[in-house]
Length: 309
Ligand SMILES: NC(=O)C1=CN([C@@H]2O[C@H](COP(=O)(O)OP(=O)(O)OC[C@H]3O[C@@H](n4cnc5c(N)ncnc54)[C@H](O)[C@@H]3O)[C@@H](O)[C@H]2O)C=CC1
Ligand SMILES: O=C([O-])CC(=O)C(=O)O
Image (tube, rainbow, N blue to C red; front, side, top):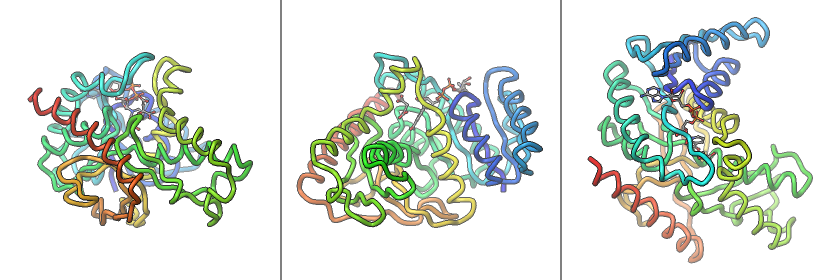
């Protein structure tokens, strides 16, 4: 199995590192436009193999996509991260151009690859990769839901003083402040979370989750990478190992949830064919209304992209 990660910055390098030490693939190719960066980080990860004990070969490339040829999965993290005071949507102009060029290069050398987008604004960059690649929806998807639910789960684990391993949750919608965490589908060791936490604390955690990306941008002056890189690697692993994991993933909706032709996070089954199935939950009126607000926001930004091209 061969995996390419485009963008050897904070998220891309973290993703490549996780893919290597978990031996998800035999070969991981890291690509960046910045001279030497991908080669350097790939070499550093390879030099760590005798310490962390893995065989995955990591290779770097400065914009030479011939090295990526025949990749099974490609993760696209290239693009600007936001700075304090910016929204993810503010990145659209620069990142749409980058995702376009990168997707063209990727499909030239790996026409059958499954593409996972990480670049922001996430839902609309996934749409961009779909437009450029022309691939079916099961093969072009975006990473956000695993990260957003991980934040939600970690905050709940802290509040309840329990292991984060025992918290399961679903979250839907766009990767922005309109995302929709679903307490009705959140459990702690199988126990509905609402039986363990008061509604005020839960609401505060939901709000913190929605702005979780911004919290880190404010602290660091740039956006997060450990959790995002690990989340993207978890998606790659589910595909490469045909695990049929159930994750929230950004995918083109084709009538599910009464929504057509919009990229939104929903629970799916991830396996060797990419999106194996979109899972449709029976949402209540409040959840449907929240999802509609999120859809409306993403649809507006998709229109901005349409007008750009
Ligand atoms: N979906 C999500 O949940 C998350 C998305 N992100 C997004 O991921 C992207 C990357 O974030 P970071 O890694 O922190 O940024 P970074 O600045 O550390 O790395 C981005 C890399 O992309 C490279 N690059 C730019 N244009 C390129 C091109 N045409 N071809 C190849 N490489 C190119 C840059 O040289 C740089 O090394 C940002 O757009 C950020 O907003 C970040 C965290 C979470
Ligand atoms: O907040 C950002 O700009 C990066 C991102 O998407 C996240 O960490 O959720």
